[in-house]
Length: 176
Image (cartoon, rainbow, N blue to C red; front, side, top):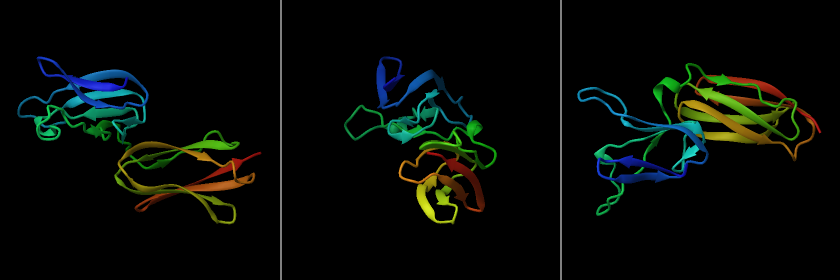
């Protein structure tokens, strides 16, 4: 699916381009008058980006009238929200990499229960920093990072996730 569109009662209006994977479901969630919530078009599937914004597996395009594009255009500005409240993990979690042992590529998954500055770093057995995989502000949600150790020697390595007062470290084994 490359585009997401909205029916305004008369015609279809393009909301955005750029869902980079398969979409399995599309739905519209209106907010009843007087209620609070997040109206919009929701899509779910196997994608990690929607309209150029990181949105892993679930994205929302707001459909409110305040989302108009540039003056003089009929185009709506796309706004993707990856923060869908019932999908935010309850706790921080750093998972064991997979595969482990690995040669030379592995995946590291982690979950963030709050928005914040995140670092994910890889160290050798002597404690020397060998790679910075993530060093940025991220919103609450689940993430997966690919670590390519093609230029590193076979050895035991440690990866550490930190965010605010949370910190966790796991061990992984590179075999060649």
